[in-house]
Image 1 (cartoon, one colour):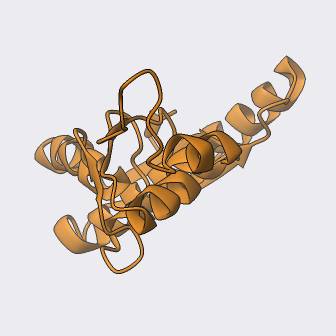
Image 2: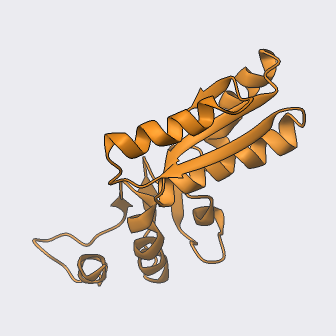
Image 3: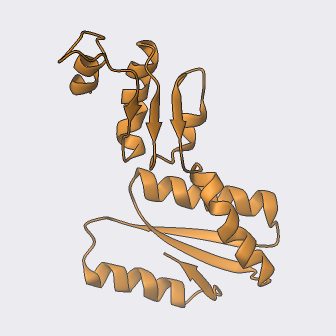
Amino acid sequence: VDHVITMTDKKERRGLIPTAIIGASSSGISLPTSIISGLRGIPQISPLSTSAALDNKAQYKLFGRTIPNDDGTAVPLVAKFASWNVKYVAVLHVDNPYGNAFADGISKVAQRDAPNLRVETREISGSADDNKIFDVIKQLKDTKFTYFFA
């Protein structure tokens, strides 16, 4: 964040004044940096930040992206499961902002677009060892779910 503050102070450096920011590669970085760049009148465009929070134009005035938000990326996945007449799908995801948001997006899109599709999410720690991962998979195996997305 300090680097963005310095970079967007609109002081000439080597004959250049910043006119846009390309990046960041994660929503966790784009959320604070796009507030700063927006306040300074500099657009920020990210190719990889998918948080739906960044859609709030009141807070992230000049933020844009070249990828759909987490809900948008879940649409084709849910459509595919619905086209296969899947009734139950379990989503295994890493417990971090991206994993949680993507799993939430799948659940929201399924409720909206495929009401007969039941989605259950299970999270695992990013530092989980093989035994913990196998335990979660075994728990999922013992359910009525026949489709899994991880």
